View 1 (cartoon, rainbow, N blue to C red):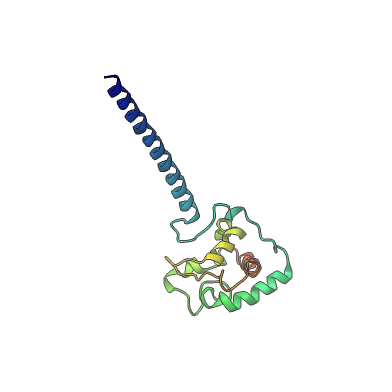
View 2 (cartoon, rainbow, N blue to C red):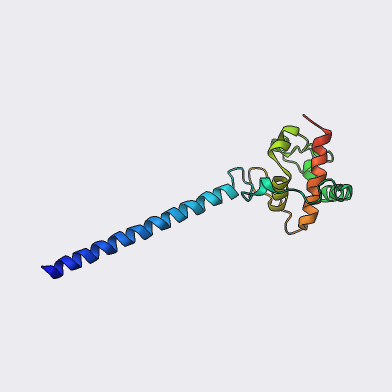
Length: 157
């Protein structure tokens, strides 16, 4: 009888230990899923949780704005249009308002860091925007951000 009690006690401890490990794994999986959801919101953009806190290292640099304008013409104008109004020849006619870079109220929601990661990572849906991480350096993307922010300043809406 004593042997049976020991076996049952041991089996109970193994069961409780296994349950504790399982619960910890579920908590870790939930935390990982939450972090992934923060990094990949339902809008299709892949943004790290700290994107809003990042600042443009080239802010206020007139040479960066000029270089950003040249890069914008080469890489962004075909969709966003010459003035950033979302009216380029390759623009999605159903998403022109989302592609309009001049809307001031959007500037409050899209800090330099967020704009940087939107350009850097792009998105596939709902409106396609090609990622530039394979074609441009980070400094070049910051230059585009510098230029894009001037479009908003010119056209408050």
